[in-house]
Amino acid sequence: MPEAVRLSRDPAARRRLLVLCTVAVAAALTGAVVGSRNGEGDGGERAGPGRRSVQADPGRRADPAARLTLERQVGQLLVMSFDDVEAPEYIRRRLRRGEGSGVILFGKNASDEGSVKALTATLQQEARGGALLATDQEGGSIRSLAFAPPQSSQGALGDPAAARTSASQGARALRDAGLNVNLAPVADVAQAGSVLAGRAYPGDARAVSPLVGVAVHAHGGERVAATAKHFPGLGRAGENTDDAPVTINASRPELEASDLVPFRAAIGAGVPLVMASHALYPGYDGDRIASQSRVVLGELLRGQMGFRGAVITDSIEARAVIARSGVAVAAERAVAAGADLVLMTGSGSWNLVHPHLLRRARGSAGFRARVREAAGRVLALKRRLGLRVPGAE
Image (cartoon, rainbow, N blue to C red; front, side, top):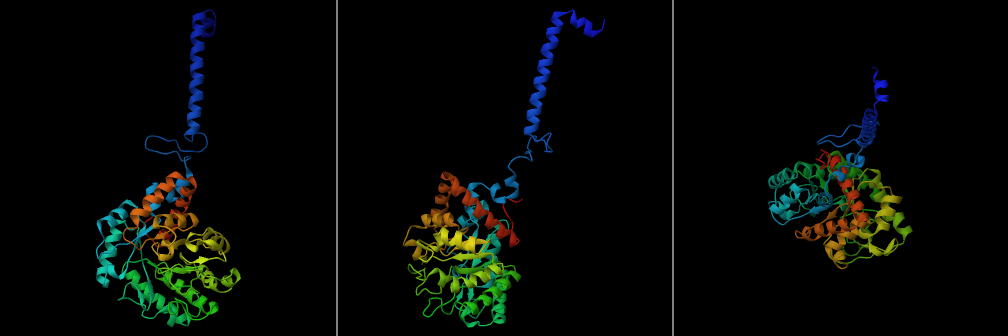
C-alpha cells in the first residue's frame, strides 16, 4: 500500500508524523539562529572550540590596545625611573608584565657607553623588545649621557646645518647605546631673561622654527623619536617648572605669533612626541596648567594644530605639579586632559600612579576610553620605532 494512503487510514501514525515534523521544523529554526550568530549564512567563519567568530568585536583586531588587559593599557601610559646602575627587579617585573611602557635613564643610571648598552639590553630583554627607553640629550650641559654628543648646546647653534649635524650625532649616539627616545629638541622661543636661555635655539620664532624642524628630521633619520618641548612654550618663563609654579602671562595672539610657531614646524616635520609644559597659560586656560588642560592639549594641540602623535608630560614630580596635587591625581588629570604618557622621574611614583589610574579606569567608562586611546597612541609610537607592539601578536 502506498505510504500516503496507509498514514491517512492510521490516526496514530498521523500523530507520530505530526510530532516528527514539528521537531524537525524547530531544529531547523534553531540551527538557523545559531548559524547566524556564528557568522554562517553571511560570509562569516563558523566559530568552534578555541576559535572566535570573525564577526565578534572587530575593534579588537584593528586596535592592539583593545587586546590588552586594563592593567596593561594603563601600564602603556607610564614611563618609569629608578636610581641604580642596574635595573631593579620591580622595574624588570613591570616591563615583563606590561605594567610600564618604558624607562627614562639619567646620568646616575650609567656612566659610560658600555654600561648603558648593557642596561638597555637588559631592559629590552625584559620587555621582549617593546620598551621605550628615553633620556634628556639636548646638548651642552643638558646631557644625561655625559660621555655622548652633542657637545654644543642648542643656544650655540644658529644655522640649520649646524642644528642638523648636532641632532644627528646625538641621536646616533643614543641609538647605538640602545635608547630610542630623546626628550629634545627644545622648541621654546627664549625671551630676555628666560630660564631656557642657552637651552633653546637662538633668535625669534622665525629663526628657531627651521632649526627645530631639521632637528626633528635628523632624529628620525637615526630611528630615534624626537620630542618637541615644552608646549605651548616656556620661553617666557623666568623660573623652571621643576623648581616652582610658573604662569605665562601672554595673550593668545602673542603666543600664537611667537611661541607656537616652532611647534607648528615640529609637527610639520612629523615629530612623534610633544612634551606638555607644567606652566599655567591664562590666555588659554586660567585654571589648569598646560599638562592638565583639555583646552591646551585637546582644542589647541590636537584640534587647531593637528598633532596626531603622542603627548608626554614633563616630570610629574615637578614643583609646579606638586603645588596643586599629589602625583597620582596629577597623572589622572593629565591623562583626562589628553596626555598619553606620564613621565615619572621619581622611582616610587609608579606605586601611587598605576593603582590610582587603574581604579579610575575601572570606575569610569569615559576615563577607560581615554586610557585605551592613549595606549593606542603609545603603541603606534612603538610600531613607528620598530619595537614589539603588545597586543598585535
